[in-house]
Length: 323
Ligand code: ADP
Ligand code: MG
Image (cartoon, rainbow, N blue to C red; front, side, top):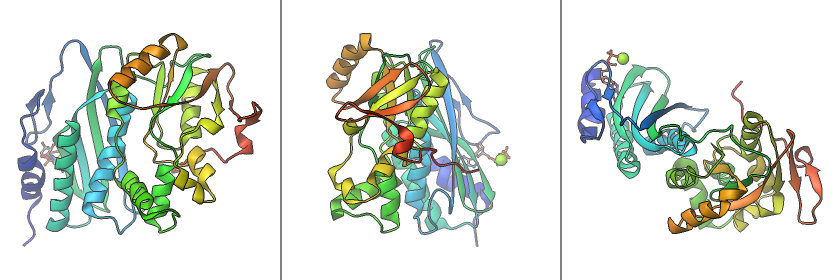
């Protein structure tokens, strides 16, 4: 006989996650959770949903869905320079499949441990497969990184390599060219992107603006520009790209407009650039300089020869939109 909704919550979400996390006054089991933070902190909250057929294919395993839902949501905390603390999950399931629930729950437990982010509640309903994850983190009061502080003259940096999200999506469709190890790396990135929490925390004292690249470098850079009322000049030849990626004819489109990157793109005033690079080096974290914030409202490229080219010459840069 299928287990009831309450047994399901108890068995797969309450008991395995009962880990006595800091700040949890009241966890799963009441009408709501009660959480506390220190006086000098502020809470940072974000929700993301993944739907079957839109954000992952029907063939995805429970483990893959759990990591994609959790990591893509947590990435917003990295972009805000926040320390992850708690999360809730709203689960819509077509039926009760205990093998699926076990795989899903165990993968969530691994990620919860890895990132120090603890499950404190949720909702369980019947419907098409859909998972909403709400993540909560903390920052020092007034120190959250936002999209709106970039100023002309700031340097623009990026974590990791670009194009891996689109490459990963292509790999799920058996359409990625490159050696087997590269394909594995792309798949791993797609299903379980490394959330750049450490980078977010390390740059937070220095950065003037930050965003996580979920819709593509240009689309997300445009969000920073719009929010900060500035433009950007990107040194196209400096964009960090895996050599293997270039075996694919659409690589540049992937790098500029591919979503699912979950790297951080951030700006830093020149006056504190050296301090930031020092702090990153101490923490053994890498970043790549990709350009500069300028006055105006345009994003342009500068190539190796110093020629300035409008972005529209390169790519359709609108980013993914649901509607
Ligand atoms: P209510 O009807 O008051 O909303 P629920 O029956 O939906 O309560 O949930 C009971 C408790 O179980 C709540 O504390 C809720 O946060 C938790 N919960 C429900 N579903 C999940 C889930 N999938 N994961 C974690 N906690 C859950
Ligand atoms: Mg409910």
